[in-house]
Amino acid sequence: MPLDPFAQRFLELARASAQGRSDEPSVTDMRRTTDGLATFAAPERRRHVETSDATLQGGAAVVPIRIYVPASAPAKASPGLLYFHGGGWLSGGLDSHDGVCRALADEGRCRVIAVDYRLAPEHRFPAAIDDCRLAFSHLMSQAERLSLDPQRIGVAGDSAGGNLAAILCQSERDATPAIALQLLLCPVLDALGRTASRRDLAKDYFIEERTMARYFECYRIDGIEPDDPRVSPLRALDLSRLPKTRIHTAEYDPLRDEALLYGELLSRAGVDARVTVHSGMIHHFYGLSGVIPYARIGLAAIGADIREAFA
Amino acid sequence: MLDRPSLTNRVLEIAGEILAEQSRSRAIGVDDALREAGLTSMAMVRLMMATEIAFNIAIPNEDLHPDNFRTVRAVASLVARLVEAQDASPFGG
Image (cartoon, rainbow over all chains, first blue to last red; front, top):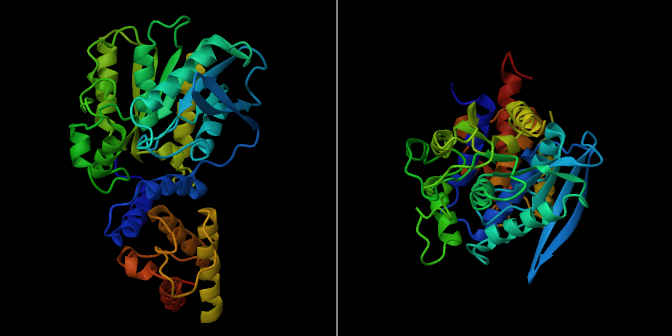
């Protein structure tokens, strides 16, 4: 299918706006870009989803979270989705993905708990994953107090947040109760991928290969190579016993092929895994319904997967 | 059709709103470089889209050039040209 015309227009404008700059954007610029994108492109604020902010503490770590409660979620023993935002491990936060989290809570009829994990390069690997793990163990141990059903807790994330979610699901595969759902949206599964889509869509498709390389450079530490499964979950040798997995990717996302490959490898390892490729769409489409009308349909499809997994 | 000073002021307002969304000062002059005032690439996309909506125009690809978005005055010139072309077209206006 050709590129969706709204997605194409968005890419043309993005390309034109980047043309004038000769220098590489700074980390501050990249953070402002992620935050700025949400101000006009994010899904509309769904008002019947209530939110509250809190902080989690574990040792010296303090991790801010935002809890989303849609009107449709049960008051007690609600399904819950732990959510890690995207932004290349170095940008994004609770506000940049607020629209996406509201939409997921609403469409999925579950509580969403978004995690404001520490960002690189100030906090490199494994700070983000440590914060995500802290949030996960807190959620599991405090499920009842948070009105959650511990049997129906999922782990989700988009882009670099999908990377964190996949890594957490691998390391927590023996958790009891087991994680009920792994939901990955346009995830980074191979830190420096060498797939055909990474090569063919390396430039001009919203997320560029040189930007990916920069993200990884800011995130990595000495001794962590791109093939290390602690940063590239696709490279893990054992993919058995992972939670039910639903991956949503986009036809024109450079990260498309690693999503398809991960789905295939999980299926071969006996995991209930399904990958949906959204035709004509680009990376982060679910967060662009302000400029790409199809994004609403995509979010509804993602919501249907959440509801089905928690049924 | 808006006269040129009103058109320029409207572009100035739009740029100011976008700067304010980025927690930047909305005080900007018509000849100030927008990028130096703090408009990121995504904010430039926002400016292009907001301009299209505000003036009911479609900026053709050949005009998606950084020179046309360097300053408020440059954007206003582009808009004036596109609005004029649209008004002159039997299908426009």
